[in-house]
Image 1 (tube, rainbow, N blue to C red):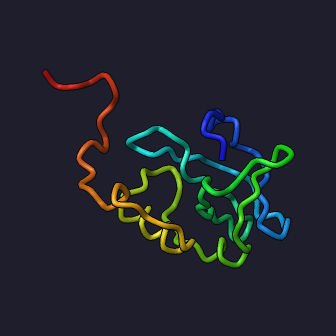
Image 2: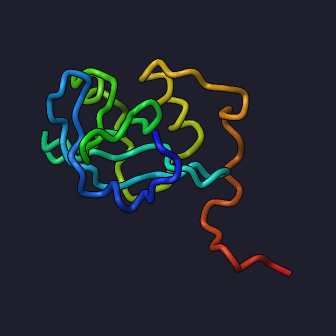
Image 3: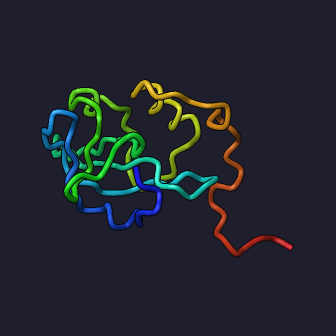
Amino acid sequence: MQIDIDPRSLIGRKAFDRAGTKIGTIDEVYLDDATGVPEWAAVRTGLFSRDAFVPLEPSELVDGALRVPFERALIRDAPDFGVGRHLSPEQELQLYHHYGLDVGPSARPTPDRDFGKLAGTEES
């Protein structure tokens, strides 16, 4: 996926599976902690108002909508971690494994020591 796209511009866009079937609407976008690159989208499926996490890579924007290269059933069965919270490295690994995506050595779980700190509030 384009890495220069503003993640906020994805919110509210429709998402479709590999067959072109509508999955739902993008609620939130999650950025990689280390790089700040958009990595996951939470898509409101409409099924019991549940959000399903989908990977933004290898997804692509097509005609203003997100095309996810996975079947709708796989997306619906993705682990449900709730939205509005930080994804832990372990949760990300579960998602990578669920979608059968390669996980490089840099994606191994590491302690989430910086969670909760605000930028610019470093201690002296």
